Length: 498
Image 1: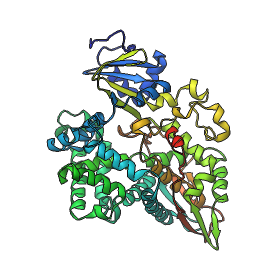
Image 2: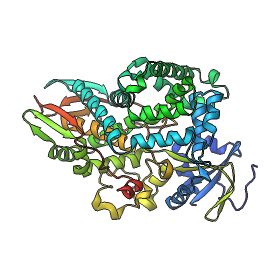
Image 3: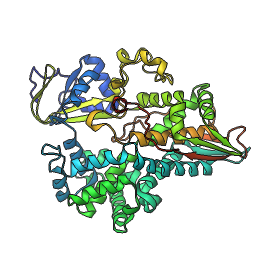
Image 4: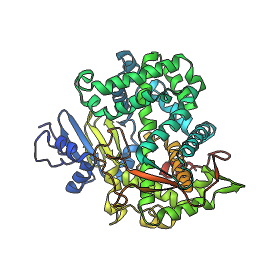
């Protein structure tokens, strides 16, 4: 027995000593925490894992308390270990990242300065607007290429098309005209690497047990090395420049800057395509829903001669059903887990948390709790987040698709703009239906990437794309008019900032 103090959160039951929870996690994946939460019925419980004690939090009020104790219940040490393992950083680079990793000595060091760089580059304002405008134009180009001639059809894998389109739009907006991912072999290597993260994280000797993803990671890292040596970052976004400068200022060797950037690509690439996929899937598969949202989009689309103009900022203020459906997609399909390390023995309400233990706050437990969301919690309800339904849903802190507190996802505004751009313009221009008989069939999500926050489909959905009726001869412009300082507030922190 690993030793359980009666003052600690109660032990979660398991039928197999030591390895029972590992078996449960491998079998049920992200739903295992939901199963344990239903079994225990307590706000926090303890999971006994080989070599590691883990506390799992199931109530939003406790999560709020945890987020206020970000030094004692800390995220940066975990992220540093994850980054070093996943990226294959050198011992020297790992030592640099470990210095003042939790900011106990002030806001200096690679960890603290990297956080500051990301927050600065991704907060609403001119620097984010610049990224958004580049991204939006890439989305427009991809939709131009996809649009079939009047009376013709194109058959695509919906997820494959979205992933390629969003990968290109995101990486060009972040890395600029010398974007390493413009080389399809490098982009393919990234997806090979990201799909093999589990084998890298769990492998005792990853170079032997995870040879393919490790080789793919090396290919992407070499591409970034060449990018930095050629001065590509000088023409890139503020996000890429500021993050690079933080690493240079802290003495990280160029080879390791390139390795860390492969890991950084996970954050900007793995969640947006699945979020866009599920949004389009649910909008088209629910009878009449796409027509209602299309009417919203049409109503705020400007017409100049044969050109129609969609402005993303106007969309966010004029399409409440589209925004509600997007939020519901994130509630219904997100499975990310906020993680903390207990830095010293401390109490969380009446429970003792032991130093060295891990703390998990799985969003799916909160998002699938009928006592919070109601008896239809398992259903996709596109109207759940409309203003008039505020009284029927829980407090905003119960929506945890982007985490919260000090580790709230800094890229949430960019990701939201990207999903809305691709979904809204797709709907405005095109129609689609699934290939074959039987209508829309929801794919499973059992093999979702370990680093993902939004579930990924296990199989693609093949669709037949046609030009929307009445759109013959229409030209399209997509823009971000003025500036994006007005944010779409989906989380408590955004509402408090307004």
